[in-house]
Length: 249
Image (cartoon, rainbow, N blue to C red; front, side, top):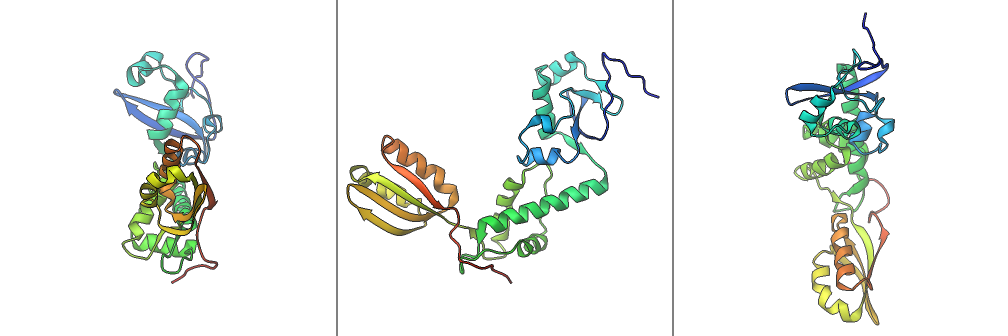
């Protein structure tokens, strides 16, 4: 039977444990089940919804809390919330094999869903179904990385699948409006970031409606704001340029 004292022990139930070894010591944190992966994939952003307590342990099951001097030596701080975040992001989640398999399958499905939402067949401009993406991922032998967010892994999958199927990020349709006097010196640099031009109009302002790779939106927006002293603008008209229907094979 464990003995619990107020000074260095506490009892917790229904716990998911994340552990990390640092500076020769083992540290653990107590989290709510099913919340660790949500935090790592940035779905859950409230740390209080993830941690059962902001305390750092040497042994969660025995309720043994880590000593302040050990925390300072290992993490160079005694801010337990910040230490918990470090362990939560980089530590090893202790789960049963059944739970681990369920988590991996769920993440695999989430990654396939993100890819299906963000990509199209470049020849038809139609999206693929989630089932088709899942099948292609399996055929490419893609292995889920539990410590990496599903959004990051979706980008990895897109690059991987380009080797075996016609797939690309769906284009974003934007409208760029720039005073004509500024547009003449910016046009060449801007159009190098554009996939295709749909409409162009010169008047007091230069108005460009075009399709771009979503990854270029930040660079275009920064370029327009900086080079026009805030007088130009970039407006997103649609997040995906796709035809109706689904692409299957």
